[in-house]
Amino acid sequence: MKEKLSFAERLKRAGSRGDFASVLMLLPAVFLLAVISIYPFCWLFRYIFYDYNGFTAYYIGFKNFTRMFQDAIFWRSVLHTFEYAVMKLVIIIPLSLLLAVLLNQKIKGSGIFRGIYFMPTVISSAVYSLIFGFIFAVYNGVLNAYLQKLGMIHSPIDWLGSASIVMISIIIVAVWGGFGNYMILFMSGLSSISEEIYESCKMDGANGVQSFFYITLPMLSPVLKVILMLAITTALKDYESILVLTNGGPNSRSEVMFTYIYKLIFGSQTTPQIGYATVLSIMAALIIGVITAVYMYLARKLDDVV
Amino acid sequence: MEKTHTVYSKKTKAMRSLLFLLLLVISLITLYPVIYIILGSFKANNELLLGGTDILPKTFIFDNYKQAWQKANFAVYTVNSLMISLGVMGLSILTTTMAGYVFARKKFKGKELLYSIFVAFMFVNVGSVSLRPLFELAVKVKMNTSLLSIILISTGMGQATYIFLVRGFMNTISKELDEAAKLDGCTFFQIYYKIILPLLKPVIATIGLLSFRTGWNEYIMPLVFTMSNDKLRPLTVGVVMLKNSGDGTAAWNLMFAGSTISIIPIIVIYMCTSRYFMSGLTAGAVKG
Image (cartoon, rainbow over all chains, first blue to last red; front, side, top):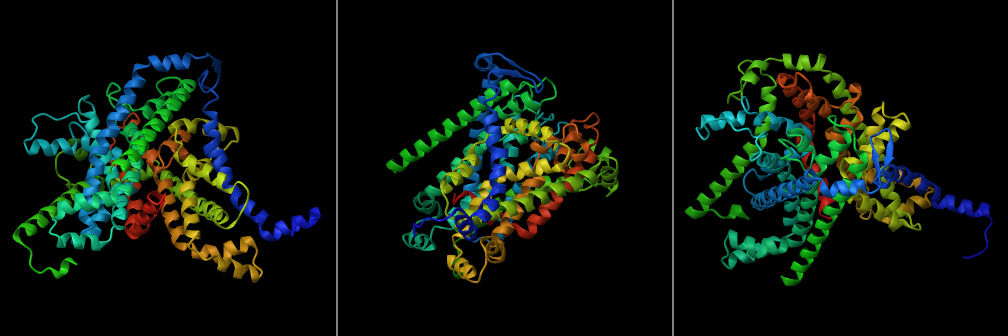
């Protein structure tokens, strides 16, 4: 086969194999990858030593880094990110798993329930956060109106403006918007567990709770690990909803890493501090990366034990 | 299986109704904000500003929609939202089916490396920072005044999952089909166009729906790109902007109508096609 071919012949062969066609067909996707994903990633490192306001850039050496380590608001926003992620996961994962298991039982109307629970995930998080903003409103909000009518509270609660409550309000919105997503993922995991195992378990006299802990959970653990990882990284990156609900307030109480960074670049209150923001973004990406790595390590360790 | 059991013990029966009740309550909580905003959009503004627990409007009025449509630019926003989502949908289907086909059927040097770069950038997410260089780039090539930049960016950010979906589905299509078509004189592209594309219909439906949703719901990226260009705003940006604008606190009726306009189309689409939505989601996430 390895005979010498002239350039023209090789060209012809490549043509008939579809080489040119495949290059052309791959080109749009590769072009988008290069421009939309790779280019901004490389750009990130361009201004880390600069004070850049969108028009002019001044070299300032390591000042962005020293500023980062002294920036109390940023590190508080890191803590808030963790607080948000942990609280969201602690509620959303058990809830969606429970619903998935229940709906897997072929209860009457389970298809309709599933359709309803998944519905929030098709709505823009910006818009449903806006809607929750109306529901949470202090004086004319419907949530306070209900609670007052039921006599559970005497004076209206400032759901989004009080430092001690704002995180809870944000979590409520996040859970509402996301649980259907994880429920569907769990359900697809459950569908791979065969009915026969449950049957034989029933014959052995196990009740629903027992069969959940002895069969469902262990059989689900590979899927559970993937879903948990997805949920962790998603929760750490959430910020669109917070931006609409509170814009990080009151007094930075609901500021997470990415709302803080967003405001440094695109906020209208101050001049853009893009150089500093790129440093913080790299830090944020590192933090998320480390957490993901730790999680994967722990998940594997757990595998060895169980 | 359950149907064969005719006699339940009292305890299981009570347990089952309790669980059913739980499911019902959660459904109500899930549906409430949507119903609240839809019904609220027919209320007069002073009724909204007064608050209260009544979910039904005292009298149904349609003036909010008229105002939103004419005075608050929602006609323009709706057209923009449609253009963006249809653009993202069409472009995503085009580029990802072609790329997935090449990845599945063509052998070339560095294929797996290129593929893993696609997958890796699915996970690299540095938040809004990446929008800054893209915006500067758009300004440089004078694309910041058209929706095309928004469409391209949204497509680019979502394409890896879809390529992954197509490639996976392609592996279930027999290669003998390709061979047969080749013997009949089809070129590489013709095989894609005439044989593969029709077979990819289920994946195309999934990609179409998911990418339409992405385009329709995009918020931060179009917000950044239309900061100084009101004419290009999609519904999401337009309606949230009302909140931040000067008379925002007072214009509840406009925001209710705007929110409704922005969520109704996607919910209707979802109700007709929920199966594809869910299957696409699980195929993309768990099997990855």
